[in-house]
Amino acid sequence: MERVYLVHCDRYDSQAIAKSIVVAAQALGVSLPHNQSVWLHPSCPWAHSQFAPHAFTHPAILEGAMLALQGNAYTIATNSLTGFPTRYSYQKAGYNDLVRKKNVRLVALDELPTSHVPTASDALVHKEVPLPHWVRTAPFTVALPKLTGSTFLSYAGALRHHLSLLSGPAQVQHHHRLPAKMVDLLPIAPPNLIVVDAIQAAHEGGELSGRPVALNLLIIGTNLVVVDAICALAYGLNPIEMPHLQVAAERGYGPIDPAQIAVLGELSLDELRRRGQQVKGVDPLPEHYPLPPQVRVVRSPKAEIFGTAGGLTEVFFTFEHAGFSWRKARETTLVIGPVDAVPDGKSDVATILFLDDTSRVTSYRGYSRIARLRGRNIPLSTLLSEVPYIMQVGNLRNSLGGEMLLARLTSQIMRLYYAWLIPQKSSMEKEVIV
Image (cartoon, rainbow, N blue to C red; front, side, top):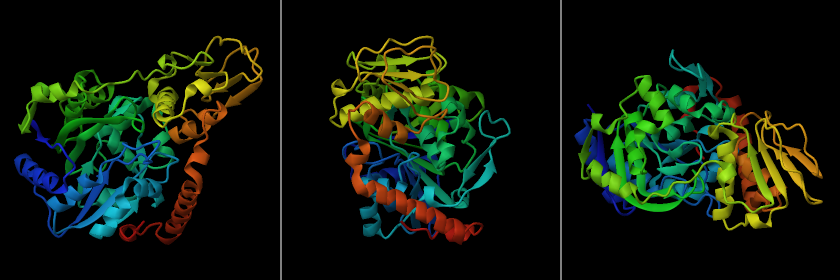
């Protein structure tokens, strides 16, 4: 029977976290390495004090993991979401300070060369995926997901985090088939140990916009699917009803029924469910978001929530939680997918915005401006930048300033540099320092 270890932890105390990881590893039968290279893989889709203040794994979790695995060489490495340079997220998450204090290497995976590797023979979406060679050869990996809400999946846990192995276009490609896409990646670079940061989980929003909720919990295990099933329970959800877990279970990657999982440690499943009652989920459908009357969302039933629709809802939450008001928006109709009709424009500034390549309508009378964001799956960074700007609610580029531009430029230069320096030399990838 698959096992998961639950720990009560009510503060970000790296010493207490380290002790919990050691005890959990022993109970799970995991031999912690010594004098090896250890890869710490945190969640860091983006970090920003105003727009994404609770989206990333807390630095104390990383420090606790390093204390638990003393005597090894540590590398912190992950990818942010497409369009957000990982080196920028590291700085805003406080990881740079941790590296300086602990003398640990910090690797931005989006800057490393990649090569295509095959996935499982029964893969539904990706028969192969681009990955840095270093990711596939790390001797010991500790995945450190952050438990958050998600406008794509109801919650984001271990499986959603594992997708951050992919960088660039691979993260966005086939996003409308997200459940199967995540399961396809499961055989690739599975972690040796998983420690989920649910001390302060995030709810009332998506992966970037969620607000903190004190679950006071670490979820520790070795199987991504099993850990994710327990994450669902901790988030107040039934894992058997989660689409991505259903696909994973059907393909034999692990049980998702709590009755088939042995729960070890300090907390029972009943206590886990009790804590999950604190979580306030959100309606992921953008047309249900409480927008002012001059803003309308028209979505085709063919437009899955896993794609642009879920991303638009994340935009609404992110800007609202950052202090912007949608009441100030110009008259706008946002169209997702092929629809039969949209309301006529009523003002001189009425704008219709088509949000993917499939979006269309036969007639759009009364609109003085017609705009389109192209792509079958539009990156969340693009939606965050363009939608509020077109609606005259806020300008993300101005809010982020030159710091983000510099990070993007530096990241591009480093990608070109390492592509020239180490196209086939996997051993040198380990020396990439942010």
